Image 1 (cartoon, one colour):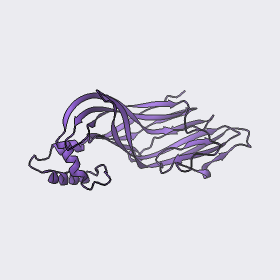
Image 2 (tube, helix red, strand yellow):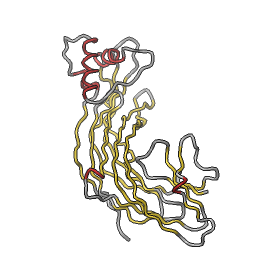
Image 3 (cartoon, rainbow, N blue to C red):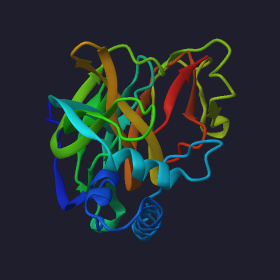
Image 4 (spheres, rainbow, N blue to C red):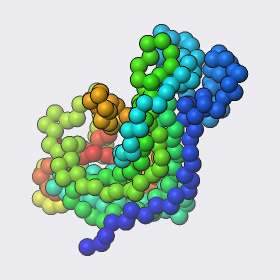
Length: 286
């Protein structure tokens, strides 16, 4: 049996200055209005934005006021979190394999920016993926671990709530994990929820009247971006747990080939979450 490889070349690993760091570095003589303008301009130059607060047009000034008056209350410690880089999904009772090797590095890249919640700092990682996933009978994922540091602050400003700030310190190892019972690749009598998922009926395979397995090799171009918040519950003295984590943005460009084996007697329909064109398909059985 061939072994799976989690090979990847780190092209870049750079710090991303968070909002709190930017505010702390501003001249003390700049009032909150001037500091807010500097903050907006600096973030725009780096392709970043402030969190929206509906009904408050002066978001930048409010954030500057809150951060300039904050005081450290607790060092809550270091934590680990993870998120999915990509996954391979197997037709139920079938087999699948994946090849991501290409000559051009630009055709097998994943770029990830993780920025700490609570106005913390972050990091940007760019990988050139060079994976072989041999034929297997269960769905799997490749996860990227992240090392975080969390602090609690008393915020500045009238009536401001305590602020939990997460800083993304470093990237941990990549981890291959098995999805023993995949929640997506299974029998769906009525198909996946059309509000959240879209089926690719032209790529479906109907073997309900066939008596033998069928193999298929498909080349995919996975390209696109996605955003999500990755949260974790952190124990806080006297307050139970509070939410920490980071805002995640992924940009993917992978040229890959997936090989599938389908058992006879069933209808197999590939489907994806709506808008998620940078992922390999799930498989529903009907």
